[in-house]
Image 1 (spheres, rainbow, N blue to C red):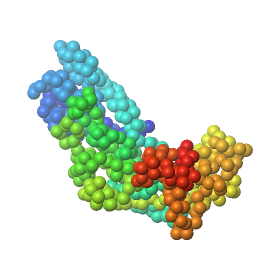
Image 2 (image 1 turned 90 degrees about the horizontal axis):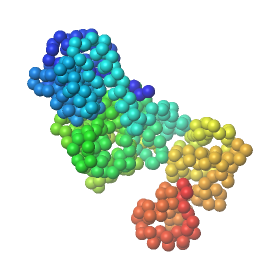
Image 3 (image 1 turned 135 degrees about the vertical axis):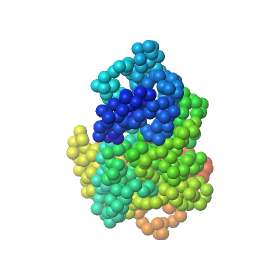
Length: 455
């Protein structure tokens, strides 16, 4: 179960006795009560605070409560509404329920009745939010910082322990598959916000046209297809942590809005004139050199300096090979549930230690999982390893300075094909050559049947 902050209730009623009674009798350590005596004052409160449940009288001195409900329902879609009505307005309250209000109570009512309805409405709010949160966060505990005791990893661990209790933004750099997401989870779990959500968004996984609406949210009608108002990830991350992975992929037009958010701690939903204030811890990750990207005009320079307050570089696996045995033991245990125990043949360990791991820890995990699936009699043997790690196909690990240009080019093409899972169009793009040129080189180097690590 994801932990939520204390319940926040807004009671809107022009009768002072009802407002005073609700604030006095319903306020607890788990429940905060705010009040408003008019529609105008209710709107002012909603601009200042985020609420979970709004209790709304249908008759107000400066407006109709039903009309106010329709307005607020679009402005704050992540809230449940309870209407207070007299017997003469029950039909209006029922109609409002058809439009999305949670429930209504009639005057006179008991405090117990009001409290019960509020609690049920809050349970519904929590369920809806938890369903949304689970799509963007992982609540399982991370590895204990990092598996391994190499000096490189100990340095990363020290940085995590130092920065986790603070609220400063963190930029995590490193190659793909090196474990940047593990660092992000470790920082969150050791922070003062550990009981609040960790919201995760991969900036390269969405089309740029919808990235801003996913982050900031939008009002109904803000753009074509916006049939209902929607809260963004910033609202979900309020008082928690927002982890933006692959921040270098963030569309340039969204970067300016993110910069304003980091500087002012406020944002606007698309189509909304009202400014919202949020309290969020930010963590960013990238495998790009953002300093070079900003100089080239591909990344907002001011944003780079704003998010690069505290940088942690995650070393590639080839620079921490002493950690490979510990990582293997961890993956054997993690992936071994429901499978017969597995051990590595000595020759396998030698090859794993000799390989330079272009895919880093993620590639090592894939290799171990493949070996466990193909293992015979509880042993992972050389013939269960992918082509890159077998003797007859293994790349020479000689000092590159001693290899010919042709040998280096062949090795590089093989690695790019591995990275693209054998997709030759993508490989040609990454290599900066045409597909015909790639096909010619594959034939020249005897790589026509090379299909990549994942094939």
